[in-house]
Length: 267
Image (cartoon, rainbow, N blue to C red; front, side):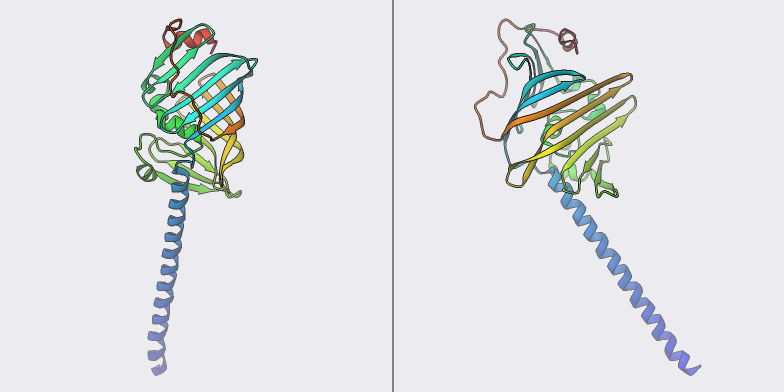
């Protein structure tokens, strides 16, 4: 019994110490995971190391094949054009910080609208920064003025057996799929009556270690309407080139509503 008096305090102290060590190890592991999550999110929010990107496009719009061109300047302009037989430009859409301009060059029509006028704008959080993130292969949190505020709304949701990481925007519900190489491979959002998905593939080195996807697949499903657009890029360049941020409308072109213009284009 006397020996038990001495042994019990030692056992209790040993248990307390091992419990403290376990808690400390768990706390350090959690801190390490949080630091790694923050690093990954910030790396995917960072702007690409280039200011400009241009590429030739092979477009497939729900079975209709066209050629085209993509031109982007970060923070200033995004231009996507479509041509018939690679010769005659028939349509162009320009995303500018304050507006969207759509041109039907075949019928000499154009339309100017604001992001608030785009269908499902509120559900998708569409503005210039969001569209820019789509095409620059970046994650985002709609409406966040900078990367720091966006990071506050983004959380790592889970990882799967293939070591893909899933990041979720807590406000709008976008889910971003990041592959084991830490590249954004897909983003999606599902809501009441719609499904929106973009997939990225064929990553190509363009500037140092920075790689850009040369194949983009857009899928939009609204009620019974299913739109699929694939864009395969070639001749991708990050050199600064001489092209205007906004295309000047000619005198021959007539301004119409966006619905009328899309009807003329058969979209």
